[in-house]
Length: 146
Length: 146
DNA sequence: TAGTTTATGATATTCATTTTCAATTGTCAA
DNA sequence: TTGACAATTGAAAATGAATATCATAAACTA
Image 1 (cartoon, rainbow over the protein chains, first blue to last red):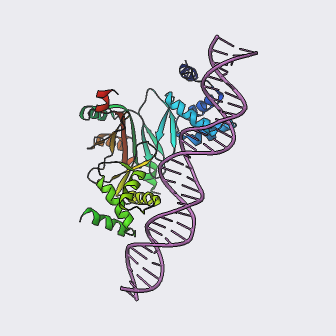
Image 2 (cartoon, rainbow over the protein chains, first blue to last red):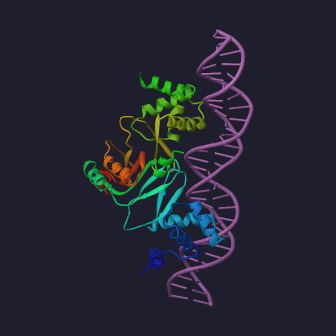
Image 3 (cartoon, chains in turn red, blue, brown, green):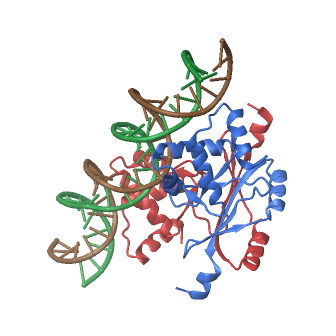
């Protein structure tokens, strides 16, 4: 079963309808796996394929997708919601954000496991998810110093 | 040199003036060291001491305080900026946020040190600051299951 | 295909935050 | 201490992302 089929099932399961708008929005997100698009950026890209779409539909759909576990909402403190495709295999969301050029570098692997274990023990807190961001300077910005 | 004196110097250093409004806002923040007040919450508390103050002044001042390293801006994804007094000694900002009751539990100590070292080496990324949030269930919410 | 329900698009609205601007208040030099 | 100048303030308007409203349109189900 490919990704589109899974998508259709997820919608059906919860009684949601499969609309052109939802499919187009998913397409745009899948075509930009490596990016962290904001709602408005997604709106702009979707309009290229489906100009009649309304902004509200994009916002609604992104919320729905998050609820369905299709996308993951990110917060880079730039005042807008950003989304990335949800990866089961790799549910760690570490991002390195360059303070100079704004580059966002993905971090694979879960180096946080030890930390989580320690928290669960010492703090008696059951961790469901985490959100980890590191701010600093990427290699380019460090070498250029511009 | 006490905290108020340091505050006055920080302002003077950058050519900012010491106004009653700024002093009152600092007082409120210092009186609530343990909290993570939002801009509006700070506004409400400040008005008790200085009713003539304008909302814009509070917003402006909080921005200024962040710039001066007097406070630290937090983001708990609740759609508003929150601030806490900046602690030199303990510049780690780990927060455990309960998904049920919304409690925010502080985490002292920097269990992230190992992780940061690994990132700096493997990613060639110079870390200046980090923002770490763990979402889950606190002990109260786990025991009650309400 | 009809009928029911959900979804959409346009628009208005909300809410936190920022901007504008005239009036006020610190600060520093004389 | 005063005056002058720049910084600051308060009130109100403006912004910008996100949400709500509601009549119309499109999906799903029998």
